[in-house]
Length: 279
Image 1 (tube, helix red, strand yellow):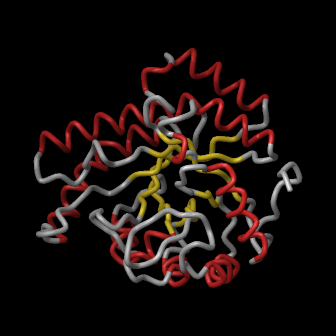
Image 2 (spheres, rainbow, N blue to C red):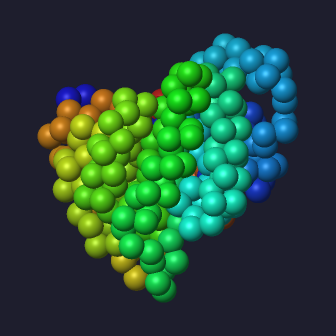
């Protein structure tokens, strides 16, 4: 296996930099693959109509920029809420995100499978039923627009670990449904990221990279936590993973933190740093 090239998730720029400026800056440094995060003022549903989005898509493609995934943070939505009104609202927001992804030519939408109360979570059967209802309302539209949904393992979500996430995704029997596996999220909850990757090998469409310990949930610069990235690399080689891997680094000075992270990963066998990086 040739180690996949690393792309950039734009989460660290959601309050400071418009998406277009962010991805063009990293394109200057030699990166081509990106995961765009929906969050005003970085990227908002209202930024352009369909025609404007198509113009943006063509402009980015001309610049050699590939938006490989779209990420809708879950702070304002909950597809697995116990309240039908909240689920309906959340489905509507995801419907709009599918439209945005399709207009921008983005093949997958990262989908957090609901949020649960950490003090008293509902039974797994209830979470599954609520998520199934929400996804059954979204998947036909996503398929018609050529957009896949990638369920992410998130500590506070309905299916935080590889076992429950994989079981639910497989139970949906839908080719448009895949998994986004976040190695820091897995490590934080005590799961082996390497084992999780192997367990989900048939469902993986994208992988997120950042660092964390197990005392506090973080998405830090690679090398500042204790995620075992050597084991992660070995697992990706084992399963012959060929999809995108995104650096999802959250830092007060994100650009140098992202570049340092890539250098650390390159030293472990991941894709080499672009030649345009500063020394």
